[in-house]
Image 1 (cartoon, rainbow, N blue to C red):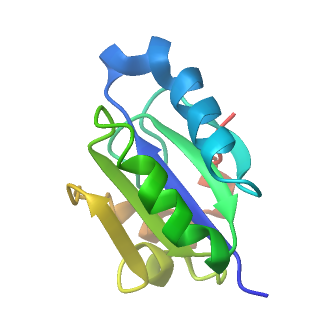
Image 2: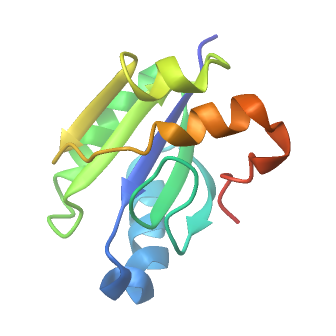
Length: 121
């Protein structure tokens, strides 16, 4: 079964609301797995974000749930194939505003895998 990640971006001034966003989405999309909140930009991601893990069956329900949170302006959904560069570029689907990711990050971790600390906490 294919696995996907959803990165729900928020601005620093929305940090206090980020847990509420995460809980609302988890309540609206059964099976959505909360993976954490990055309170600052990490890895290739340009903004703080909430990360979820999901299956293909949860993608459309997630999109519908995001429409109920107008404060969320941008979400990246991608398959988790193990090829981070491909997953975040040609494999990426944006809901809302498309953001510029830092693809130099993937070059950095290719040279020094110890730098791969982009998982939210």
